Length: 194
Image (tube, rainbow, N blue to C red; front, top):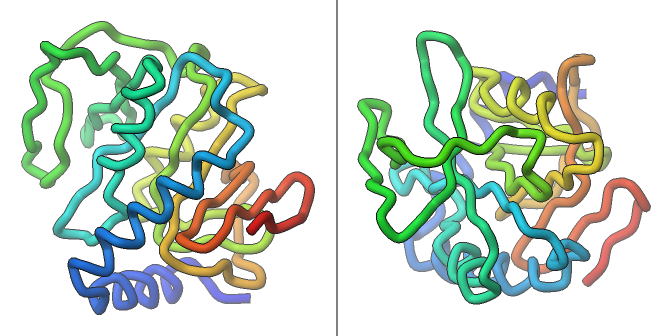
């Protein structure tokens, strides 16, 4: 069983080696795959705004789908002094600004509590076949996901296949699904839908 630090290094390197055009193409494939998820009857969707410098999945394509379906989109602002995130409704007049950490965030707006969120698209570096994810190690998303509703659906987005098994802590909140360019992995029902 690989430890988180080793896997963080592995996946950062794998992402660094991806050409920009491959990232765009695979991000579009992930958004198209996401259309097959059983989540589109909900109202409140939380999405992360990608950090291009870290070669994250580009969520712009998913954002267009959500806007096209007239969903309420929620984005976060991280407070590095407390380790917590605040969540704001993304509206036409929402001002987004890049933080000192290189993260595009809302300046202010209508705050939405985590309990209201029905679907959360979760950033990750790696994950395993049981839906346990590895983030950047700051714990922002673990603390945030714990505050969500018991019925909230957590969807990871990844360019890569899962690891067999990773070390996880009791505080780690597992994913319900992970969407890759080729398939959707359903962790609760242990099957792959292609």
